[in-house]
Length: 431
Image (cartoon, rainbow, N blue to C red; front, side):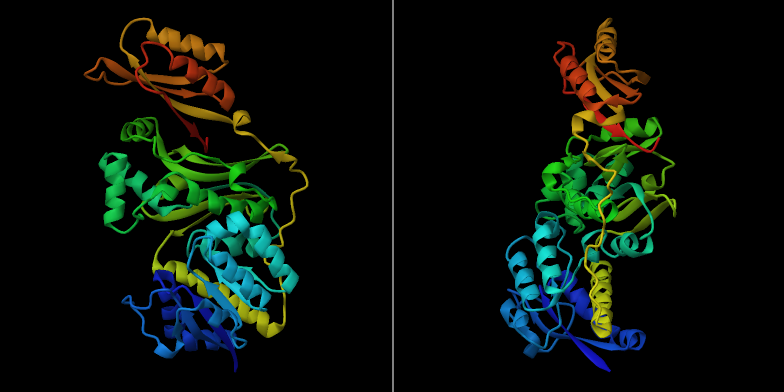
């Protein structure tokens, strides 16, 4: 039986999971694919940490170059994360004639062009299923299972930390800070959760989904990014009263000849499938012309979930090696009907608006007059309970309006002396 050797750079939580799966399922995998997969070498900067998997000391080291330079290693698995030195390790591995598996969405989102170009030049591949949705097979599904389809949109809950935080705020009525503390206590959030809470992690994943579905390379600066730090428990409660749930969505949507690529909190109808996705779970809702609307759902994090996706990539590569095949990592063809990216000011949405106004006659009339001046039509308006400060939340839902008109109206409204806080506006989708 042919043997494929794997070198692992990064022996953290997911790395341990990969080793565990390859040890425990070694014979099962060999029976299924006719190839024996062996972890030949592992490197990590800290080998003193206690790990939940046992490996021989002779295969452990701290120097990644020992793995990259080993002619007997066929596949390099990079699981250290971050940009540097991960980028240098992957480039070096490709130039040494090795295939690469990674879960590094930030690196691929920011430097994927360069890495994939080198991979193609060398006739090698970079596989990255675990970079979006952990064990959810969304990348393979778009590349292979839906290969004949054209896509109109992808809506994704692709960050477990932010989804857990919003779920806690919804279920417990707690503040954002309280929900983040709970996420940290349960190991669902990093010590500094900024990348998750502010939508950056979701945006990295959206770069990859946009290319796979539409063949369009976008950078982070092309994406409108707004996190959940301004969402309050009151907004979540008011949204529920209106029949909506608030989720942080990564969205790519084709509108006429343009793509909208954005990450932001979004009101979804309570009956929408994505509205029921709670806790650290992820879900990607794909709209296609042949297969219709599909939702991919599962844990968005976790050792074995992410490691399962990494092992799947390793298996795919071993089969390519066995067959002597080279399949370019990214074989998407750009949708020729897409002429560019729609700028945020031109986005059109329905909106939820919360305005904190002094409760006295004439204030609502002033607000309505400003909205009318900007051509904004109101679908519903509700005045909530008066607060002790005599300030009352005024909650509105608009009909479709351009972003620039809404922002212009709110800027003018917030200058009124009877408006006591900056107004909140959250986009509505799925209706």
